[in-house]
Structures are given as C-alpha cells and as structure tokens.
Length: 287
Image (cartoon, rainbow, N blue to C red):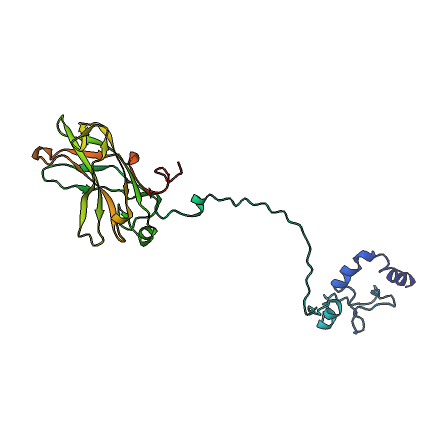
C-alpha cells in the first residue's frame, strides 16, 4: 500500500513541466466532487487504487475570456489632437532647374496654317462638255481642320486677323488615254461663297507646268508631271464663311476626249495655306 502511495506521489513528478499546459487544455487535471471519481492527493496527483474500483473521467476544459479581462490588457483609450494644431516648417533649399524655353511656334498654334492632301489616287475626267471636278483634299496633314470637306474655310478669326493668305499647291499627275496622243490638263483655285450659290471656278488658274501649253499643261500619254501654283490672296478678297477649293479638268472638251483622264498621285500632292506675312515654307517652318 505504501508502495502504491509512493507511486501516486511520483505520478506528476515524472511529467516534464513543458507538457503541463497540454494536460490542462485536455482536461487531464479535472477533479470531480463525486467520491471515487478523479480523486487527487494534496499535490493534485490522480489517485488510482488498483485494489478498488476507481472512476477516471477526462473532459476538455474551456477558457473563459471576458470583456473585462480584455480591457485590462488592451488600451482602448482614444488620443485626441490638441487644438489649435501647430505645424513645423523645415527650411529646405531646393534647386529646381527646369527648361521652359518653348519655341513660339510650338507654344501657340497658328490659326492660319493648314496643309491638306488627297487620301487616295483620284481621276480627273475629260470628255465633251465635261465640267471641272472638285479635287479630294481631305487628308489633314497639319494645322486647321476643315469645316467644309476638301476646302479651306474662312473663320471670323482668320478674317479679323487682317492677314493675307499664301497658297502653295503641288499636284503630281499622270495622263491616261485610250490612244497615243497628248492632252492639256487644267487646274484651278476656286472661291465658294457661304450659301453655295456662287462658285468662281476659275478664280485663280494658269498653274505652272513642266511643259507649258496654252495656259494649261501639255502632257503625253502616261507621262507624269507636276502642276504648281503659289499665290497670295489678299484679306480683302474673302469674307467670313467663304471657302477655297481646288478643281481640275482633263481634256479640252472635244467629243473624242471621252476616254481621257488624268490621275492624281496622292503621296506627291499637297495644298499648303500660310500667313503671307511670315517667311515660312509649306510646312510653316521659318526659312
């Protein structure tokens, strides 16, 4: 009996202290108030009587954490700012070197300048009693947009500026015919009034050709030429709402010219409008 008691006293002593918490979590230190169930000695070791019937009950235990226990370990007090608020200024010498030297031409868009070209190749028909056809010039390479398709529109700003306009036109074209002959192709700068009731087709004509002939361009079958025109249009010659366009006519209006036409090369054709008072090229760059 003494040997059994000695074994009971040494029961907890042989358990390493690092495992004690695990035993507590699993309810191994549970003690019942019922006689014969989980009896423990003064050292809280379980007493197991091998000669008598003993009851050993193992139950999990819960840890109850209350709000009061949380508040006691967590500082929930809010720290308010004190008013009026104060600021500290740190004096720092910043060396900022930014180059803001923007060219005048880039900083302010020129309201006069525009450069147009055709989007694609275009045929100018000939034939008996054929009328001049307006050229397609709707590709805006730079500058002012077109309020009227294929045309340079005179806005109030352009008119009120008092400037004269410089037109530079280059038309690269080829003469196509069903017979081995030559023809004359005519090009015009036209002026159109706002209500479209008046079109001065031959407002500015007589383009310069590589082979001049009778005021137009004498051109052989499948030959390629450039028709050019540079002219200054005074501010007094136009008003707000007017527009300018380019027209062309292939042939001299003879019955046998029905199958004759000129083809414009879009990539080598342009129409540039600049302020006549400025010494600039067709891209509005200073010369």
